[in-house]
Image (cartoon, rainbow, N blue to C red; front, side):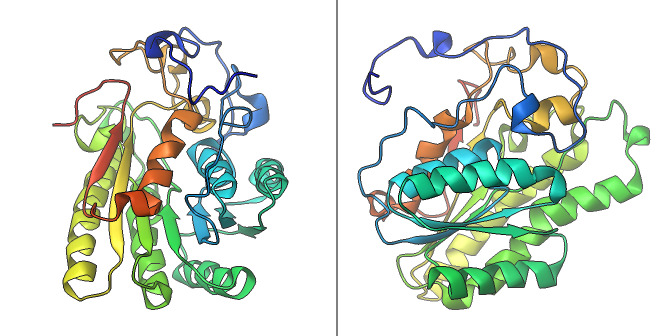
Length: 298
């Protein structure tokens, strides 16, 4: 197979465009029921040793963007702890772990709810014990649910969105910071919604704006304190993952609102995380890389 990382093609034509088939899934959804199937780089991602010997934690690493990042990190030489929510994601998590191990790297699966601070601490403690250290923390897990009006948003759903998307990020960073050596990297997943919020994703978009500020602020704190830890973010646009049909009722046209007229694939986002985690990005901190199919983030 030709190495897709080196081939030239029209990006707008590279992957499927909407309309997609109607497919209802219970949240958070599973890869096996996603149609069309997403590309996580299983066949295309070729590593070059950018993360050789590194130890990484990826939340939401079982599927979607998290799976693509786990594959890329492993093929770049990193051992990976994959954090995911519950039993419904066991199948996806095991597939991802298998892909990491096929790259010759160690995969640790850690199931549980990151809304709980004690669980967040266990994630970090487990990484230190089982991987032998921690160099990269990817805060990627997120919860969303599309609602047409503010009145439709249950108060407990608002709380869950904030505790999963931003409060857990604080818990994990706080637990990880004492273990991160100079040159380590924290990468947070924000969203195009931080710049252009969807009217159907009020709580989610609000958390993504908070993540932008958290990333910039924490970056300053850790550098000015002499920690030597870089904190950055990636802002995906509409990316085709199981979360979409399981939380958005009008997913048939998902991604059509980009200049490329299609959603992105997880494989198209993962290289941004590799870059930020690697020494290629040694002078980049407090920054956000947009991966949005051309949607503007200024």
